[in-house]
Amino acid sequence: MAYFLEQLYFHISISVVSELKPSQLVITLANTIRNIYMNETSPIWEDKIYLGQWQTAEGPQAAVIGPATGEVLAKVQTATPVDVGRAALIANSAQQHWATLPFDQKAEILRRAAALLKERAEEINRWNIRECGSTAAKAEWELQVTYEQAQMAAALPMQPNGQIFPSSMPGRRNYWKRVPIGTVGVIAPWNFPILLAMRSVFPALAMGNCVILKPAPMSAICGGALMAEVLEAAGLPEGVFHVLPGGPEVGEALVQHSDVGMISFTGSTAVGEKIGETCGRMLKKCALELGGNNAMVVLEDADLEAASSSAAWGAFLHQGQICMQAGRHLVHRSVADKYMNKLAERATRLVTGDPWKQQVHLGPLINETQARRVEEIVNRSVAMGANVVAGGKRDGNFFEATVLSGVTPEMPAFGEEIFGPVAPITLFDSDEEAIALVNASPYGLAAAIHSASTERAQRFAERIRVGMVHINDQTVNNEFQVPFGGMGRSGTSGRFGGPANLDEFTTTQWVSVMEQGIQYPF
Image (cartoon, rainbow, N blue to C red):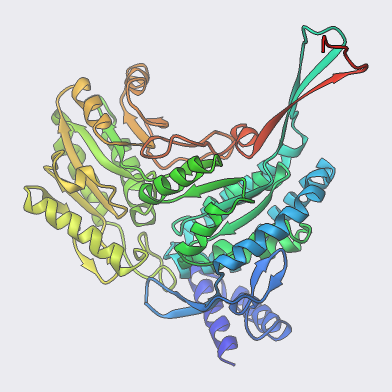
């Protein structure tokens, strides 16, 4: 009965958020009641993990905490390092069959998975909002982009996978081809738990690999268990995909397992460096998409209305908890006051609150530790001379959209990845100075440049050390058909998306063929 009431509450709440008409609300509630009585009284992920199929595990149950309220939303069964070994054994046994499956069958499974994401959108979005503090708009956008990733991945198995090369040896044929790595480990974060997991999972599967996914503990349902259900329902063969919720010890076991041929990691630079060291020592392939402290550059000829709009979106979307967040606003001194006022005006209009219960622009930060960290960075910077132009206050896990002026390079608001809804403004007087400020950060993920002259902005882009530059736009951009990745401490190994996926999730093999054997001198 408790599960029934909880599910009913979920659907009433999401219906209010979606502003359904009364007739639609009645239909939604009727469908909810029917589905609850037809299904199990508790979700399967409460006492099982997905090892190619749902199986019992030895790890403890973990509580899933809603960041907006602090309440326990559900419990999930967690894995242990022993389960990593079980998953690797099962995956390696299943991989050859999966790799040799005809390309059209792989593609059809991925297309079915994409369709199921759409069919289960309400449930997936509900958990994204509740688990991660996502607004409804962010959750819907994330799922749409994940759907596009699945569709893109479905096209990969039919792409040419090699080349023919000439030979200096008479009668020899040379061909070079991509082949699966084997088993790929994917370690995903909590901020975009579905997209940042499945952008690796889908193409890795498409290229003939098995995958072991370790979702973040804070988003183990929407970013893990539900994805297992989707791929299972899509017809993925048993043993090809695994989901192992758990803490750092599970991730460490996954990285260190000799039968896992590649690690795809999205997360902090500190953890990524350790993963890179381990993979390097084991001669294991890795793709690392790490932190960022991204510059939003506003030149003196910029359209300030457009620039401030881009800046607000880039700084405050998902409470600033995005690796591509516009974390440093570098503004020409001659237009700084106008830009600051426009950005502050936008910030003060943003509503902060529980995205499950009301229409808001900003939800909670993921936990109190992160909220206090953002507060501490703001307070330290203010103590060093920065000014709070808008926001600046914390209430539990909620933090207002904040604009800081007078920020200088020695302040933490300039030098650290804040991962919160804070827009620090730093002034410059020339393009040379602005370029130096951009390159002053060891991170190199993304940047944005606003100028009336796109030629000038492109010349500027050529001189900054970042993996992605967006001219007259903001830093939070991701198109599934374009390779994505950074430089420096944002991760120089690995690209995700588009044609990069063909090489990222494969290795290569040279095959030479002689119709008749050769007689060598000895």
